[in-house]
Amino acid sequence: MAEQTMAGRALALPQSIGRRALWQRRHLFERLQPYLYLLPVIITLGIWIYWPLVRTVYLSFFQWNLLPTTPMIYVGWENYRRILGLPEMQQAIRNTVVYTLGIMPLSVIIPLIVALFTDNIGKRWRNLYRGLIFIPMLIAPVVVSIIWRWLLNPTVGIVNYALTGGTFAEPINFFRGETIAIWTIIGITGWKLVGFSTLIFSAAITNINRDYIEAASIDGANYRQIVRSIILPLLSPTVLLLVMLSVLLVSQWSFAYINVLTQGGPLGATTNVYYILYTYGFRTFAIGWSSAAAVILFITFGLLAAGLLSLINRYSFYDS
Image (cartoon, rainbow, N blue to C red; front, side):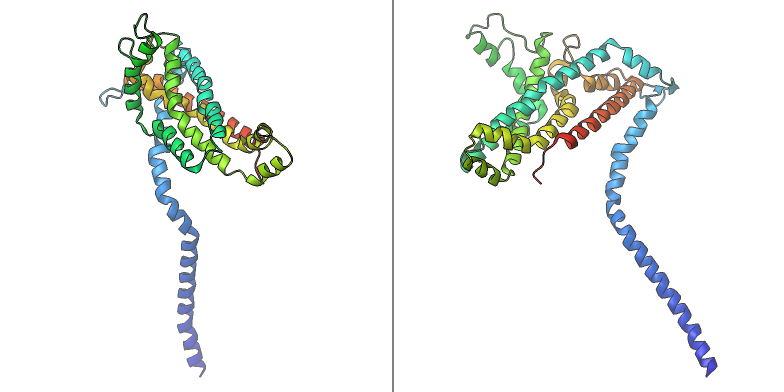
């Protein structure tokens, strides 16, 4: 009888160990399952975002022209010292500041005003105007550039024809004037962004709890007071978000128009940090300078993004 009991225990022991191992594997899989779902995204980000970033930092310490037969010469921090001392880089930085400040009325202020004034129109007309105002955002930047180059042509352009009363006397060269060229690029960039920003503001206004507005109206507040005391504070997260997007992305948004319409001219008057980075990398093949400029750009805009996010978290007013 004792021998049978010991034999049963001996047979049950492997079964118990097998069940425990199976439970441990299942428990491990359950813990790893969320990360397995994220694995394709992590791999994609690693290949397309982080590896190029690491490679850019690495190349910024070398002198190279992208040719496989040409040796890479280590120069250390020399690329950074040279790139920051170049007059064209300093001009590009100044122009980037001008682009950033110039785009704010077109990407934030005017869309906010349009969204406020069109909030009370009928649903059918509201949908129509939203569709019409968003059309520029759907057009490819190269196509937009071609259209505006034709409209602003100094000899046959409709804009010059209207400004000179149909005589084309002393036409304005919008893309070759040192002072006006950068504002022309800003205007084209803003024209494309107005619809996008207006829809963002319109959606934010729609999400505001109407009970606040009705209560203020019952208390005798007029529309101006409602906008100042209720709508604008509740729109502060959206306003700050669009300000941040404008600061961080205006150079990228304007790149296509600079490349097609002015090529950074005249005399660098319309270049910006993105375009000069492209020029060093793909026109002069100074890959070390281009990589150094890209690293400087990444660090600068990263710090700006961190500061702007801090401002958003500090000064945004939420309905909660």
